[in-house]
Length: 128
Length: 489
Image 1 (cartoon, rainbow over the protein chains, first blue to last red):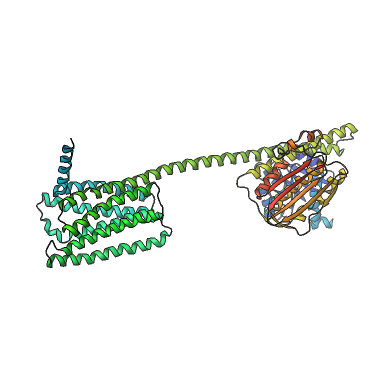
Image 2: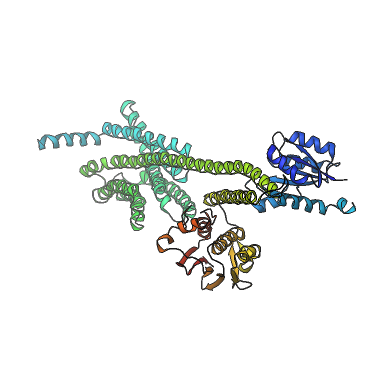
């Protein structure tokens, strides 16, 4: 069975592109705002989440915190997507618990690489 | 004419030396002093400084003294009071209060010009206590003398002379201190003038007491106006100071307002740059992702021309992204409160070009890194890395195949240098002083399709400036360029 990924991204074009990039290897689902995203993540319990930082309704950071504080989905791998102008070091020091991050604009290869990195780290993935 | 004037003058002088004249004089002084005291009091309520407190105590004491005196005189004139009853205590109490207030006022003007104000304040308190103690002793002596010696005795005159001498000492010290320490600003000159005017009276009185047993009427009349003039002069100083302070305050608040306004504008600019660059990144991301997906043949096969076209779109996208990053980077660096997080770093690690090796190898350029291992420098590593990346990629960019790029470092006394040397196309002399300008790219460079942003060198310059260093360029067309970053150790 393919592993599943939820993309939470309010920019439809970017979300679709991310889906195109990942759909050959993963079971991809999309949400376009924070609320819908969180609902989808709780319902589907995906292996990984591609999470935009700036989202309507609930921000990416807030979703990240809620995932981490939820026992059932707490171990979900999170990749943050940011267009924020933070320095790389600041992003690395993210206190809100993402596993990795990627800066806009990025190449399809970068997204694939980051996803395989965070999922590769997972012990569940090794068992499969 | 002159005679008429003199007659009037003598008339006034004579009137002022009578007991009624004394009342008029003291009342005028009282009104003036109450006004000044009130002025200082309201200022003191707003701002509690030592100087204002001394001034306030001094002027209030002086006002009470005048009130006491004019009260006694008024009662003598209108109430038929026998002034002789008060003669036992009044002169000494009166003198005591006067001297006490003079010490306070003199100190109020001395205090701000002292080097060690705190220690000085303690000393002033002891001086004031000393004055009080001394007057208590004098009071006892006075009562004793009144009972055992005749009124016009030389002893009593010497006592008065001594009291006058103390007044001279207080203001003499004030003038002397200001003069010796060369504190000749606008206020202090007026303070010195007021003190000097005040001194005339005690000097005349001493002469009168010692030579004429206090009976010379001319000297007494002559001595009359000076304390009054002196009080007017002191009032003027206080007034000047308060007015100047008010003006200064309003100027200060204006400057502060302008400063806040500038800060606001600069903040707005930062926010604007930040928001715009964020908004630009989103469409850029879509464009790049779809271009790449097309190039990956995700949407079907491509002809050679289509592929080349998509590659151009892709590389232009990268160029635009770099431009946005550079604008943002420079905007952050130009921010007034940008901070360096300096630390001891190994320059050879900071200039490790491994990540950029491909860049040079692709073009067939040899890179030699001569920076010795363990060359320790105190810089902000992230920011210095930007210096290195910009200089290095420029060198590679403007050097043709077969050329070379050399990185060097050297240390000399209190400076160290990082040098990037290339055998590239060089920069024309007339363009050399423009290369650190924003968005400046030498024309030849543009035609070579080198997709720079024109912000790399301004960023380098700014970071070098922030470190307190300098950057120099030596260049010869077709021979190459050398960039020397010189930093204080």
